[in-house]
Length: 311
Image (cartoon, one colour):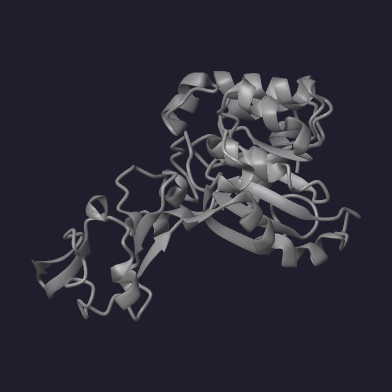
């Protein structure tokens, strides 16, 4: 087994002063790697664990400075009606970073940085002063592990959690990992933000590319272990807000009465802007953001099945 400081994790973003990923003021740490491919994914840059090249076409001025420094041919040009334009072949990129170095307009970037557990703790340490500030519910803050799916890097997570005894730790998880892995970290996580995406297993597969059998088993395991859980409910109008799923949400909240509450996460389109940046070809949900009326309808429908702990 590696010494603790020789284990590394790959993280694609760290957001200080987050107010959406658990109680209080938090630092949200976004891990790369995810076993699901949800059609509405807001963070498609998290799919692969390794770092990736990002290309923002709208920032490119066509100076072509990146072409001569690229040794793999990932940067090239093609003829178009507007003349020669810059294209990126992401699969050919070796992540040498030379194109990023010469791009003066931030059109090229490598997303994903490697940390040791100790280095990550040092990175978030300046934020700790804000964690004791209470929110409107009188709760203090901490760190939220999100992604992607943090459990894809469980070795690193377990090591990092051994260093965070004085910090409140929440983990957002899709639940798709081995029970043995969850058993390793459950006692060191103060709050699980557990995603529940679709009730019908066949539909779950069509929306996320995996069924929900293991996910539901892990929800049961964490609950029986006494974990504090908020059930997170990403809902997309016309996609997974069917009556079967809304009733299924109510059933889960009824069967697990010690779940803190169900938290609806209305669909937004932010993930769509990232697809071309990373050369992704997966089909995505492409529609308007969920409205306030959608949210109120979902809450009312779930409450009609006899549960009240829904937000």
